[in-house]
Structure formats: C-alpha cells, structure tokens
Length: 427
Image (cartoon, rainbow, N blue to C red; front, side, top):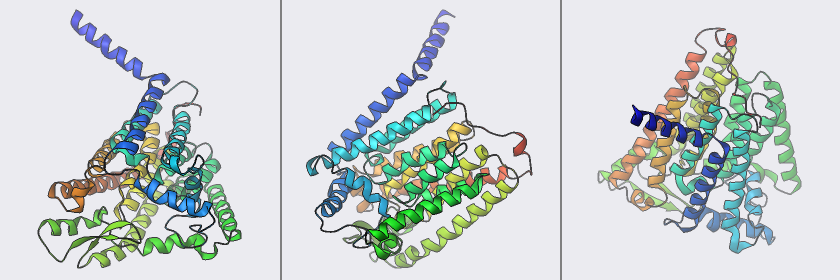
C-alpha cells in the first residue's frame, strides 16, 4: 500500500508541476529553442524558403528594384510582404534569425492569450500543451514558412471569436491577406456567429482598405494576382491527390516522373492525367467547401451552440482546403493547429480524436520533411506509404468534422438549451 501511495503521490506531483504557467512557459521556451536550432542547423535546408526566397524578395523591394505583388503578380496576398520585409530589420546576414524571432514572439503573444491571466482552466492548459506538442512533432517547418505568421493570428482570432467577433474578423482577415487559408475561418465565423453581419462588414471593409492601399502603391491587378498564380500551378508531389501517380512511379511506370518547376520552385508530377487532375482540384475544392457550408448552415439554423459548431466547422473547412489542394506543401499542416486548439478549449473530451489524428499528421510530415525529403523525390516506397497514410488521416479528419457538425444539428433546438461556453481564462 505504501508503494502504491508513493506512486500516486509521484503522479500527482508531476501533474501539479505541469499544471502551472511556469511549466507551460518553460515548455514553450524549450520547444521554440529546439525548433530555432533545427531551422538553423538541421540537414535538409529547412529554412530554405525564408533565406533563399523571402530574403531575395525583401532585398529587391528594399533596393527599389522590384516589389512583389505591386510591380508584378505574386503567389501570395499583398500583406505577406510585411513580415518578409520586417525580417530585414537587422540586416540581410541575420535575416533567418530575425524571421525566427518574429514567429516566436507572435507565438508567445498568442500563447499568453491562450493561457490567460485568470485561473488557468484545465481545457486551456490541455490546449496549450497540445499546441506545444504539435509544434515539436511537426518540426522546423512549424516556424520556417510564411504560414507560421498566420497560424498564431488565426488562433487568437478563433479564441476571441465568441466574445469579440469584430476583433476576430479583423485578425482572420489580416491573416487571409498574408496567406489565403484563414479566409476559411472567416467563412466559418460568418456561419457560426450570431453577429455574422458585423463579421461580414468588418472583413469586407478591411479587405477594401488593403486593396485600396495596394492600388495607391501602384499594384493594379497585381494586388489579386495570387489567384491566377495559384491557378497556374501543376500537381505538386505532396498533394494528397498526387499519391496515385507516386505509386505508379513506385510500380515502375516510366511515363510518370517528378520534375522541378523553376518558376514556382516546387517538385511536380509529370505524366498522363496529372495536368487534368491539377485542373480538377479547384472545382473539387469548391464542391467540398459548399458541402461544408451547407452542413454548417443546417447546424446553425437548428440552434447549435457556437462552441459546439465553430471548432468542427473550422476544422472541416481547413481539411477540405488541404485535401483538395494541388500544392499540398508540408507547411500546410500548421493550419490544423488553429481549429484543434479552439476545439480543445471548448470541448476537450470531444476533440481528443482530431487532436490525436492531427498530431499523427504532424509527425508523419516531420519524418518526410525536411531531413529525408530526398527519399520522397525518388518515390521511395516507404515514404510514399507515409504520404498515403497522411492523406488517409486527413480524410478521417474530414469525416470526423462532417459527422460532428451533422450530429450537432441533428435535433432542432437541443443545443440552445445547453450552451457551451469557453472555460474562464481572461486573456
């Protein structure tokens, strides 16, 4: 009995130690220090896009040579240039380190919002530890791309969505003008929020303002050139839909190859049907988004509580964007953090399944990229299998999200009698 009591006391001690803010901030520091080190020192050139591409764009603009998105069409929305330019603050030689510092500071601000200043609730503590674990599992790509700027902005927007929908609309719209994907979270907020009119007005006014400033700067149609730039892409090897062609390469089909596109700077599939599949991803994505919208509206019209509907709706939108995407870059996995953190804050037990699935997606992505990415480029069967499992996990996530929304709206009026409110933790 004494030994059992000692074990129980030991477990209770560890649990208590991990439950405080000091432990959370220690974990935050350790995870981010490790990710910064991996970005700067790990094999596979994980910070390549930042120091090899973003820095060139920022330097060209700083020298008055070429402003991406203004002087010529760009693959990103216009606000993506803000963090890229900011990373030049301490000079070109320290561009990578400055970028990593900016991302870490953004994460720290939103981490503070997540755990709040009031009594730290168990759901928020769980969400905070999960986010740190997710970042560690995903590896250096979690900090080393433009997506890393948008994820903390999106998490903050979602955390404030219930009580401050206008603030949430501002943050999510800004995120969408850095990298398009948070626009899906704006759509989810419009469906799930009772103040959807305010959300639409704020998002529209802010977008008009951003476009207006771009036009004054001389962008012309280049301000929305990212739409056409994305449409011109081919089928990238990491895209879930590319798995079929990768298995053909594994099987020895000579007509299917992996080629490097020097314009887009990505590895793409070349072979029978690949271009047609790439073209089909856009209508498939539109159909998927429409299906999520209709199911979300059904749940909202039947009185489903915001805290029940919003996390699964946001997750479903994000997964559709990932599954029906001809690009499929590894950094897209970072998007999944925002809806899962929200889900764990509102409904930790219910959201344990997608939290585990997303953690697995992060781990498989880290195994593939950046250290052993070369094995995928030669269609090594083990790495093609990992990519296939990752696609399967995304399908499972979408099925979970759709099912959760459908069940939430299954009984008219039941959710309104048991409102789900976020656990108290004042930001």
